[in-house]
Length: 624
Image (cartoon, rainbow, N blue to C red; front, top):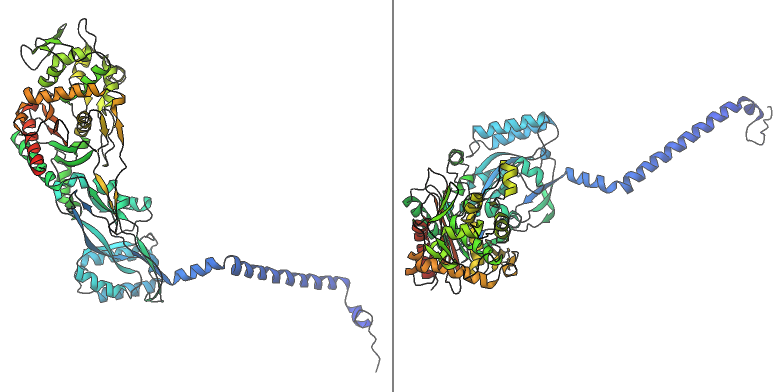
């Protein structure tokens, strides 16, 4: 046998001769590729396990976990005496959640068939509901349905909800959810104040990610203004489910935080009485609308605020579409809260403010006297007093007591050698006193009123400002409008001789543990930095004289001392003027402010004063 001799490379001489340098190079490239692939796979495994492992683990958990929302209880509303004004009623809905249904269409079909089979005969699962379920099923199959759950049945009764809950506990994608439906205990009496809640819309869900399709949201009134505090925060429960959607165990749970109750400044007994009086006097005046406001001038608390016509806020919970459409088309606009959003010429109720402006600017003082002959004439134009023949010699006290127009023509626009305030000074000073701006009351929808000026008229109307415009402005007519709430707030400032409080409904919040937090989030302005206390007291004296011997003297027969101002605001030549009264009592130490407005109610000294008389009597009889 021939001997095989190996060389130093481990190959026999014959083998070495068989491997060319090119083949050796290819083998090396092959080993290199294997090496690269190995390390690439190893790197990927490290990346998935160490870097992205938590994400994929959570995704895996999500595939077998179902999240249930635990609804927070919506806070309630109480009057100042602790009487409940609203309550929550459980409302049950049947939902389909696409993300919780099986992925395969055939499996989903089995779930839908099983649901319909097991719910046959249950009250509330009628043909209309079955048709909605078919629509949802079709939209899921066509991939047009969003991931947000769909409500297929609303307002289920309790027994049906229990039966459906037992069935849906073992069916993926179906669930019975509960939400708080409002019951407004006094309906029209407080509808403008409380407002109402309504089911959330797609737009609400897009804006508020924390809301669910079964939720209600505040739409108007205090329900809207304090939505965040009333709603609270929902909790959630994470449940592990098997492939059939059946619950196995609770993985995690977060308790809900119930909404706060709101304790209001409103006195329910007074509110009900004010509503009754408003209805009576609107009917007596053959009017169609009006408002009454009662406030505490010491802090700006609203004690009662009624607006007519009104509506029943329960119709939004009952989904009474026919009644809603009827109210929406009513020309008297019952949804308008006239107390805060109605804008009217103030008539003579503006005269106390014009008086303050004149005193501040030095146009008049306590001794200034003007002779009233029944009006003044400028060329062909005559600006009358309400009293034929005039009021004779008139100082500020008499001008306020008898509402003498001639005095305010002089004061506002001047006449002959008497220089008046002029429109710019009138606007500047009325703005100090809250006209032409919102009061900031804790209700949505407030209007700011309006005061015209020469520059405004030229720009908006293309016409010059005439002296007659200033005369009209000086007596609360023409290019000026106010809300009844603005009249109430500046009357509070007059009652307090300069202390101006922001009007508000909220006395405080009470949480689920019955802890009360007083509302201190309202502003105070000391107007004596602008108008002197002496000037305020002089105007107050004139308002007291209006009750003692002037246009509001029918209030002088009450035991309590009252100060006030009437107003008769012209609207047009075809309708009666609006009837105004604003005043406060007791004169020495004011407890309440009362504002009455009856649209097209005639002379303010008639029905408006008579309505105010009854409210003053009721308040002080109840608070002896």
